[in-house]
Length: 114
Image (cartoon, rainbow, N blue to C red; front, side):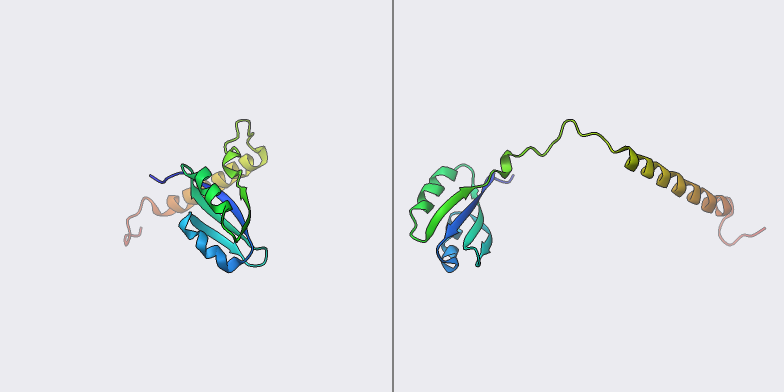
């Protein structure tokens, strides 16, 4: 089972020094233009890791990701009637085509003609 990870955006003074953050977690992206590092840290040691990283001389600011707080399941989502109608139409068209193709060849074995 995977361990739970939380995201961080770490603003640094120099992007080349950002490689030193590898020992704290998994680096996802390093922006050389905006001088920040997007990384994931173990959730169990999240607060301790942030305290340690804030003391590093090349780190200017640390922002926590709030992505894990956003709900991903929606309770009152209503199905789209137009899409439902299109799927039914496609299904009926495909069934008609397969019936017409199978209707010609289904009863006669291969190689035998009347």
